[in-house]
Image (cartoon, rainbow, N blue to C red; front, top):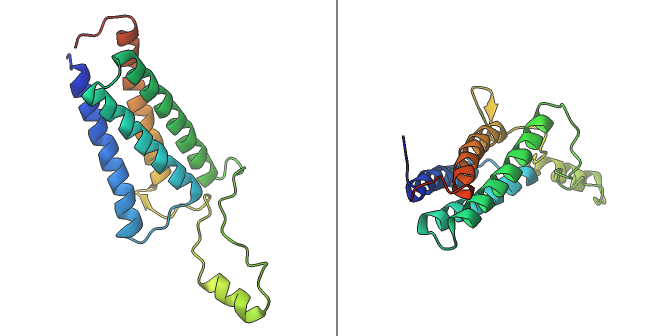
Length: 164
């Protein structure tokens, strides 16, 4: 099955739009605050979306767009894998995801108020899952699949075997 370069990137951009809009929907509609790694992944998905939209409108040439998309998807896959491994407790987080510790409180009442009114934004604790699959797991799976497909297209474009 042959798919044109433009249609390939339209399909990929559609996936990225669904993922980015879903992240905003989960944050604002379901009141699930994202951790720092979730926000990093969201920004990376927005970069992926921009690169796919460049592919749809073919602003620069195909080789540059495909290479940028592949690199961005690779970095996104690594970030999502890192976040998933932290959630499973297999590795320790080297980034600071926790919110204020409350050590600047001057009284017990102020410390209690900080504790009661602080959302848990630690990256190690998933706040949303679907059948045991967290959002970082979904991000990893989706970005890895898109990366593998994008690498196939990039390989064909770089070796001039891809038809418009």
